[in-house]
Amino acid sequence: MTMHTLRHFLAGLAAGLLGVYTASAAAAVSPLDLVGPISDYKIYVTENTHKLVADTRAFTSAVKAGDVEQAKRLFAPTRMSYERIEPVAELFSDLDAAIDSRADDHEQAERDPGFTGFHRIEYSLWEQNSAQDLGPVADTLMADVLELQKRLAGLTFPPEKVVGGAAVLMEEVAATKISGEEDRYSHTDLWDFQANFEGAYKIVELLRPLIGNEDEAFAQKTDANFKVVFDTLHKYRTADGGFESYLKLNDDDRKLLAGRVNVLAEDLSRLRGMMGLN
Image 1 (cartoon, rainbow, N blue to C red):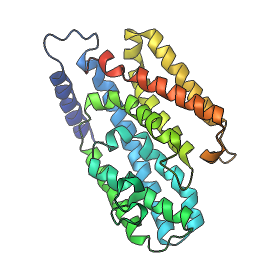
Image 2: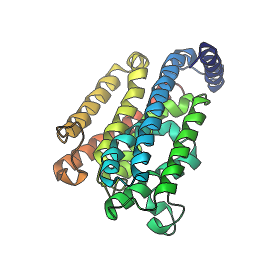
Image 3: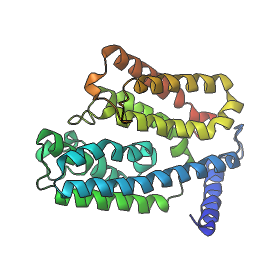
């Protein structure tokens, strides 16, 4: 990001933040207090988007080369960058549907020509153990990821979406992902969970000084609950830094994760109000 672009972004961000507040608002957090955390979050998103592009290029190259085992190895780590930035990636619903939709979202499920993206490739790699005829799907995925990078680079991040994004990530994990529905063919869900928790925690981390001023007990409780979920996931780390299959998660750990994620989702839903963004 050039200095000119950064100045333009910060000016636009400050104007947007000021527009959120009315003269009668009594929020303890000033709109200008959020400029730093939001701009730092954009840097975090930019870094993850760059990595997503590079990793997707390697992944789709393996798919197009017909190297099923290499594509399988790259699938989960490639997706982590996307999962970390989901709150803002999902602002572009057309791209999110193309990149990350599930078979259930389409009338003909896996046979539907509109079923594209990561999970269409996942289906072929694991259910059919094949990369045959996936070249066009891989090319479309690569093009969609590049388009996402372009759109995010030009986006002035809505403060309420960023601040609320931590809760959105946890709500999505609690509502659907905890069942294992997302990576249903590969069972690489723990990689996604780790990335979702990292993305949510990054938002909390950037807002931590402001949260502490508002409610130190809330900040400590949130940190403790994040530690539990990270520690639980760490139990399933493999020697190469990856994760075991989600099928190996025992019932007690599933219940523990579900409980803590629900608490995190409920607690983090308060962040927008604490920042005066409701």
